[in-house]
Image (cartoon, rainbow, N blue to C red; front, top):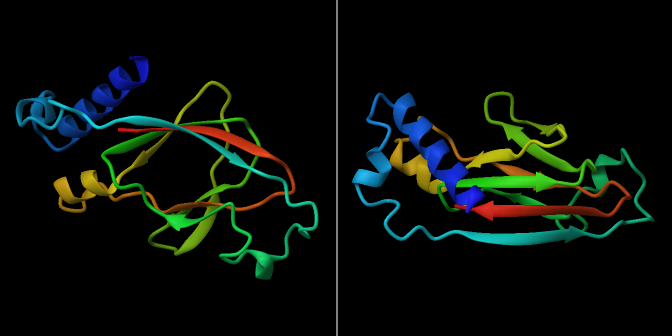
Length: 141
């Protein structure tokens, strides 16, 4: 319930940022039957990986290849192990997403990008192997 409340609050903030009423998404029926689910993710350690060898970061060994999430927003809790990266659309470079203890990572999804006519862009991200096991919990809203 708390994640659902957080998701609704974030959508209210997005509406306000668009100079709309904070209940806009609720009023148009976007939250009538929200499709939300929690996914627990595990990325195994790759002990043979030579860290820093960017040529090894290909589709065969990536923890999760580059993608965006299809929903409105994603709330992500991580265990602090590095590996999550997002892509800066202007510079076109991959950047490490820092872990902040007790904080959730918020990704904008494809649906929000479409609803806002690309004002809010969906987050292109991936998980690269670091030689350590990695766990995260993603709440797709």
